[in-house]
Amino acid sequence: MPRREGLRALLAAYPVPSSERMTFAAMNALTGHPGDPLSRSTFNPGHFTASAFVLSPLRDSVLLVHHQKLSRWLQPGGHIDPEDADVISAARREVLEETGLTVATLSDDVFDIDIHTYPPGREPEHAHFDIRFLFGADSLEVPGSDEIDDWRWVGFEEIESVDDDPSLTRPFEKARRWVGSDAS
Image (cartoon, rainbow, N blue to C red):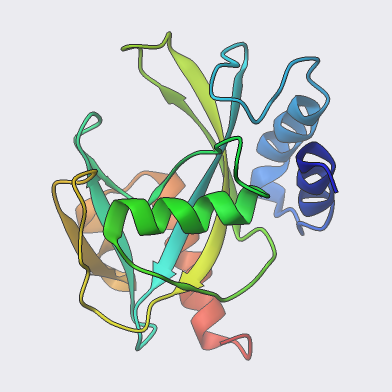
């Protein structure tokens, strides 16, 4: 299945919470963009990205990496490369590139969605339409990489002291609920 159609199918299967309806509508609209909405060179209005919320082996914390340019703690993630078969493959690759971890897919479904503005630099300011997935690690040891300058496991109850942005607190709450459900 071509990547754009795969993305549409992923989004169509996402059970959209009421708080994410506007984000979902914008993402759905972007799938019909005349350019390539998966290409990092599509700046108007932006492009899709893929990221990962990685649960610890005991499922009591989530891995965050320190983003050098933004100077913030965020989930691993980034652009969808042309060689990525699909969006979830891009998220898995980003985890490996940024942390050195090989992770297990805990669900093939979209876990969370978010749109955020990426500041200008080598590229103009643009929006990242982020599709997020849930993965699990089998070790607390993170080999690391030269792409990040630090990483940490953050407990569900700690996230607001690290960053209180809803783009992080919302998926942390979803992960906490997922762990408490029969899904884990």
